[in-house]
Length: 380
Length: 77
Image 1 (cartoon, helix red, strand yellow):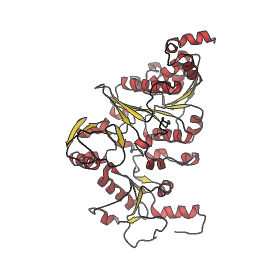
Image 2 (image 1 turned 90 degrees about the horizontal axis):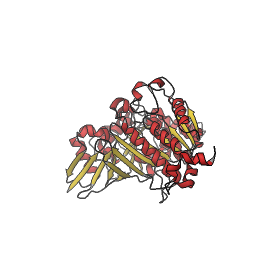
Image 3 (image 1 turned 180 degrees about the vertical axis):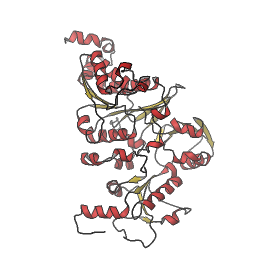
Image 4 (image 1 turned 135 degrees about the horizontal axis):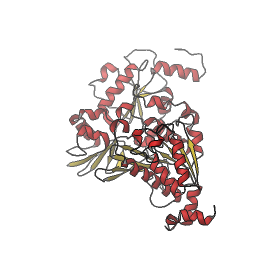
């Protein structure tokens, strides 16, 4: 296409001195991956494609349902039962013939996320579940990609740019706000809680706006700030997100650890959100902010000498006045049962003032794993 | 000493309101204890706490007219 025709399409936004020809070129050369072509993804995709973002990826394994249509505005009644990624791509290709659209008709997982995200400059989170949100956050941290986050509930939305280094050199990620996922039954999604159709329209458009600001380098993007918007009151509220050192240890340390991390488990309501595995436990051992509690009765074997800890049996935990340092408490027992009870007790006691975890599988499993990785003959 | 509290998302179902005021709490730990005593279901709710629009992770002392925000995670999209 000739430059004249190309520029005619974008003429009204190129008139803005903040965008101009240089800004438009940046947009055309940028690659944005939108994960989730739902309530947030549809409006975000529509504006990004219209603005001339040169390459747009769309990840979604879902098909269009009738209950989607009040808010997922790229789809029509005739699309019911068809792939969202492919239908969205077809609509956007007609909207803007200059750009490249890559539909990915599969679910983002810890097996495919890194390879996919690596190909893009900016990731837009339009997912609808915590498992995908934490997975996406961790992948973006590992690959150093900015994540334009948003989430909605009923009449309220949240938007933020995460994992993007601000002028002060700080980059905040989702785990700095909520270190570990809630269990599925703790927070209702749109299917359960309901959502006003226009709300994701507003919030998804804000995601497109923030993405365009990031690409073109204009304005004050929501880097390390979270904006909340209430559609009933029209009130918005902005929160400053400071990075939090202890929470960094919850992110898998490398690509291999990421691929081995069970994100569905971490968000499953059947298991407890208090539990951590031996790998995470090990990575937290070196953290000065952690206090470890042995909640077994006195005299139980094996004796633990590998790391410093406090010994308070579960039977004495209740009602005892506790002076525990550290923002993170980790309980352990023989096999993980009593320590889970202890973690719940401590959580009731300390509320949100501390992060509280129980070592899954107990000290028996931890010792077995440590022995295995030390490649010794020692057995429990 | 009055502390203003703004409650976001579904935890407002527990408090029955988006706005509360609390008197005489010295710090955020005391505030959480006070809220838990008044609304026991809050004990099991997950939320981040902001003092005057800044998310905090550690116990933070409060002064007159501080505004606290309780922000739960949202999953919808």
